[in-house]
Structures are given as C-alpha cells and as structure tokens.
Image (tube, rainbow, N blue to C red; front, top):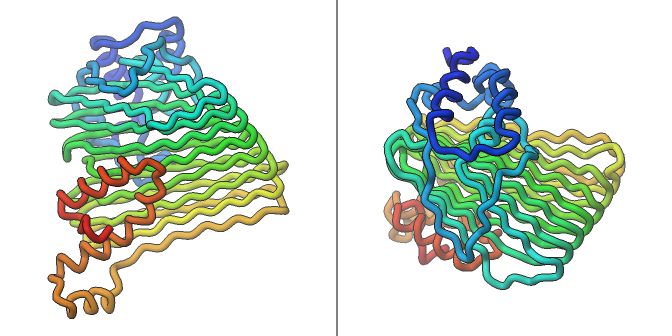
Amino acid sequence: MEPTTLSVVEKWMESAQNGAYIHHPTSEQWSGQLAQMPFPSTKMEDWKYTRTQRLAQVNWKLALGNVMSDPEFESIEPSVAIKSVGFFPTLNAAFTTQAWKIEIPENAVEEEAFQFVFKVNGDQSWTQPRFLVQAKKNSHSKFVFHFESMDQTLVNTVLEVQIEDGAHVDIDIIQDFSDQSFQVLDVAVDQEKNSICNVVTHSLNGGWVRNNLLMQLNGEGSHAGLAGFYLPHQSQLIDNHTIVDHKVPNCTSNELYKGVLYDQARGVFNGKVFVRRDAQKTEAYQSNKNIMMSDTAVMDSKPELEIYADDVRCSHGSTTGQFDEEALFYLRARGLSAEGAKQLLVSAYVKEVIDRSSNPAVVTFVKQELAKRGRIIADEI
C-alpha cells in the first residue's frame, strides 16, 4: 500500500526546510496549503497508473542544480501564480530552489533558440527549479530546456509560459536522466489571441518521469501543438498527462504522443481535451500510439474529449500493439538482422514526433543520442 497520510507530507516539508531554497513573501502561504494536502497515490484519479511509493521512500536532500544557459536567463524571485494545481507544483512554490525569467520584447524575432541546460548530481539530491517565459505581442522565439542527471536524483520543475496576442513560441524539452532518477515536470501555457505554441517532449531516458502539460487557449485564433515520444526500458516509467483547454471560439490543437516500450517498462498517457460551451468552430485532434517490444511491458492509455459546444471538429484515438510481423520478415529477407529490422522500424516510427521540432539542432542531437543507445538507426532517420 502506498503511504498517503499527512506524516508523509510532513516528512517532505521537514526535508525541504533543512535544505537550500528561496524564502519569498508567499513561502509560508504555500507551505500552509501543502500541509493540508495528501501525498499523491494510486487512489487518486490523476495518479491511478503512477505509483509514488518509490519516490516517498527516499530521504531526499534539497539542493541547487547546475545551470548553463545561452543567453543568460534572469534570476528572479519565484512567481506566486500556480496554473497547475496539485502536490508537486505546490511543493515547488513553497520551496523553490532557483527561479529564472526571460521576456521576449514586442515584435522581436529571435532567430536562435534560447538554450537552458539543467543538471543535478549527487545521490539523493532533490532540486526544484522554476522558469517563467513571457512572449510579448507578435514576437517569435524558440526555447530548449534540457534536463540531465546522474545518481539517484529528483527534479521537481515548474515552467510557466505566457504568450500574448500574435506571439509564436516553440519549446523543446529534452529529458535524459539516470535509471535511478525521478522527475516531475509541470508546464503551464497561457495563450492569447492569434498566438501559436508548440511543445515537443523528447524523453530519452529516466527511471521515473511524470510530465504534466496544461495548455489554455484564451484568445480566438490561437493554436496549440503537443508532441512527445518515450522509449522506456528495464523497469522505467514514463507518464504523460496533458490538458488542452479550448475556452474561446476558432482555435485549433493537434496532439501526438508515441511510445516504444521494452522489457518490464511502463508507460502512461492521459490526454484530456476540453471544448467549452462558447468555444464554437474548435478543431482539436489527439492521438496516442504505442508499440510493445516485450510481453512484460505495460501501457495505460486514456485519451479523453469533453465537448460542450456543438459546432466543432474533434477526434481522439489510441492504439497499442506489436510490430507488423510481415514488415519485420520483409526487412530480414533483405539482409537485416532481427535487431536491425526492429531498429529501422522504430526509427521510422519516432521520426514523425522528432520532426515536429522546429529546431534542426535539437532534431540532430536527439537522433544521434538515440542511435548511440541502439534505439534507432541514425542514417535512416
């Protein structure tokens, strides 16, 4: 049974209070709210498929991460607003270890991506970074958030993105953690009129990863693009929870997540699309596809649509299965080994997601990393 009593929360708070974090005017407010929260467990709908027992059993030490950015982000006091509610965003707000803000000026067009590499090392190290991106009217910008770790670490991250009228923001998230690591990532995006935001999540490795992505379409004519891939192996867990909230008319969204699961790995996809009563002329598409590379891997997929408007075009779907045996036979008949044939098929399978990135450097880097780890054949992707 997973621990869900308040004593577990008190343990987290005691560990945090003994570590390095930013004391800001609302710290006590968030600490008070945190003390009243239960620790997430499989008894809760949002955590039904995601066991947190391993996470709660470690004696974490709150510490700072190592930061490299180009150009430099502005270090700030933590934002008091929380778009993604829940235990881990509140824990981050109460005990933020580091916080940064970057503002893209009105009408600015940034040709080069803003790159941010966050590393944390040291056994049982726990860190809670926070980022705020503000894209002013009619600006165009790209961001790369690259997370790495070694040892047994926990990175509890909050990324807030505020996009004004006519602005365009492309975000690549690269997750490359050790097999013993944990990450909880909450991304909250607010979009105004005629804005565009694309978020691509590249989950290269990680022992236990939970991604929460909330995209709110608040202004007409806005578009949200979501994509991600995950290739967990051994006993790894990759969990993607997404919410796309269409609040106003004439907005679009397109969502594609693909997984390839090996060994005893587990994957979770829970995607929700809300179309509010006033959000007429909405177009929303959602798809989750998974390939099982072993009989012992597990995938829990739950795509959801909640539509309260009557003039919309929406679809959602989920498929989980194994590779086509005929395709494997065809490739082997042309000289490829069994492993090589599977790598070639995985290459073609994940290409659709990787290529949704607008950053050629990220596309090249991700493909090279996957090839080095024997997941794909680089020359064929």
